[in-house]
Every structure is written in structure tokens, then in C-alpha cells.
Length: 334
Image (cartoon, rainbow, N blue to C red; front, side, top):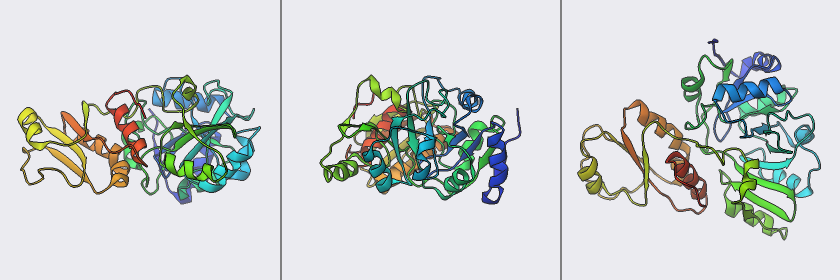
């Protein structure tokens, strides 16, 4: 076991030194916290898999500081990829492109492509600008667990396993980046719904006479986070379209129950049994931002089973539905 250090913005040179030594440093992004290692180093990328217990056929996202460093992560880049990055980055958009030769094949699970992102979080930007290499960075949690959206969640998952955590403001989106494949203008596909909605991407591309399709075939393996179990808490999570408190009280009155739902909660005037944990979110953005934290908080409070309300699949709801289905170990069908 190693001592996990907490870094602040003034400590970034020390964090970079650790990364240059092939150690791992978690850092905040506007989606979730990432577990960063040198994307050029086979040793560092293998260490990420080991720290997370992550299946080695699940590639990482390659994080870069700016568009002028895209050549460090990708090559043979189509013009439309530049257009998309210019419009949506820095931000929660990841694009699948032909990988640069310098990127470790370990980081891409031996695929010829790389998932590339320019995060917008100020702390992530400061770290990446100080690094002489891109960072391979999946979410900073044990594989299959809810993704961390603050430094405390990272420490709870990886203390004693990784070298450091760059502290910073909590993630503002709470669900991971949108992943699209963009090998050329004729084949643009959504591989993973995320913080940038399908509708927003469709509007942008339609203005250029282009379109985007939802990819459901095995090609989605090029995208991180689409194959193996993800986001799952220690207790069973069940999904319903409407929270029915009388039914839940009748069937689970003697259990410690957790509820995740949107406002207003039907029959909210009923008094739930003592020990129940109910989180009512004001809107879909609030639901997405707090989802992973709520799942972990329920664990800490001893929840035995949880119910979550299924939102509409429009806008950000498509990403939230995907994460809820994976957390509940249900097949995603966007």
C-alpha cells in the first residue's frame, strides 16, 4: 500500500513529476474524476488497469489540453472532427479517431483507434497543459463501481492504491462524456450517450448536411464504458417509470429503502418508514449530476435496496437512462 497524496493547483508540478515516473494521479473533469497516467507509457497504462481491476479489453479515453495537441493522440483526422472539437471543446465530447503511433497500445486495448477528449474543467486543463504527454484516463474508481464526482469518492475507492489525487471542484455534469465515432463524414455514430445530447449533435451536423446514427453493433467496443458492468452499487437497484410510495411501503416497509426520483414525487404527503432515504431531484440535470454520489451515499447509509425513476430518453435523459440501466445491470437499449 502506498500513501495517496492530495494535490492542489499549486502542487501541479509535483503531480506532473509523479506522472513522468509512471505513477497514477486522479484529476477532476466536468463529467467525472479521471484516473490519469502517461498515455505514451505501456507501464503507466498497465498500472491503470491494475489499480481499477479493469478488464484489459476496455480502452481508455486519451485526454489532451487543446486542439493544437490533437496530433499527439490521433492521426489522419477528418475535417469534421476538427469542426466538432471546435464547437464542443473543451467539454464533455469524446471522438474516436485513428490513433497516433505514439499512444500506447495498452491504452487503446490494442485497437487501431483512440478515444480523444479535451476536458474543460480548470484543474484538468492546468494539469494537461503542464504535462508533456496526453493522459490516458478512465474514471477514477474500481471497475464496475459508480464513477466518482468529487475527490472524497476517489479517496474512498483508491486510497493506498494510487499516488495522488488532484483536488478541485466537483463535476458539474455527473455523467461521462458523449462518445462518437468520426472516422469520416459519411460514418458519424453515437457510441455512448453523455453530457452532450444526441439532439445537440444532430442539430450541429445537420447544418453541415451531415447526420449521426446510434451505433448498436459490436463496433461500439471502440468506446470505453460500453461493454462490461459499470456504475453498480452494492445493493440491488430497480428501475420504474413512476415511484409508487404506497406500493413500496406495502412491499418494502420493513427494509431500508433508497429512492431516486424527479420532483414532484407522487403521494409525497405520505410519511415513508423510518430509515428510508429519498432523494428528489429538481430536474434531469440535477438527477444526472448527483446520481453516482447518491448511489454511494445510499451504501454508506445501509440501504438494502433502491428504486430509481426512469426519465424520458430525450436530451440528457438518454445518457441518464443508459447509466441507470447499467447500474441496475439491465441491458441498455437507447
